[in-house]
Image (cartoon, rainbow, N blue to C red; front, side, top):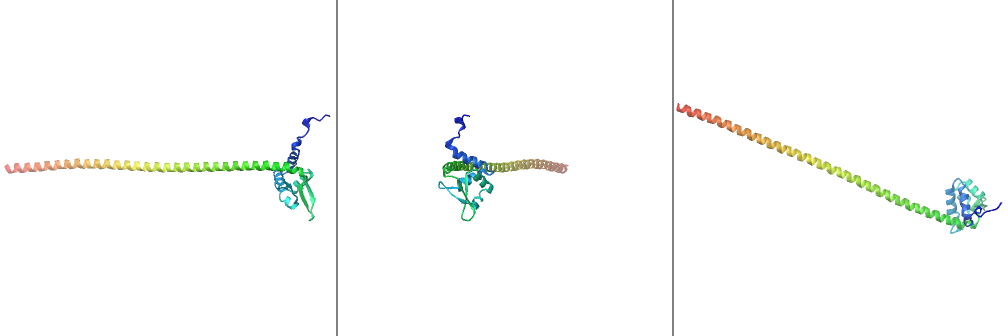
Length: 196
């Protein structure tokens, strides 16, 4: 059997690949990745943490799996418990690079989330402003409608008053004519009664 170049792993990323494959085989890969990147490396140095602290981040079975994969090492401490640390210094640099990429991605996602929230808030404000304008427009339309109704009612009242005035004038004129005719008939009766 002949080994081909394609059969060989990418040695440049071998430690990063080892790290990623190891954490991805756990039941909590995201937590395991963040724990190792943020807790077991400080100022580009691997550090050792007591098992009680480690178990506040990961399940004991996850820690044991990472020990079995040789990503972590468990050593007895002076209190009779165990400390966990990265198994070798050569893992530090690729894990720090992975952590920086993750943090950069998280920051980009955070910025996108902020922009989306700002956009959502702007859209909510615009919608609220639109609704307020619609409400104001409806209020103005209602005022105009009421003013039109009052104007129409006033016009009707004016026309009725003019018609009543006209009718009263016609009735008064008829009454004057009637009275005048009575006066004339009475005067004529008097005049004819005197002459006879």
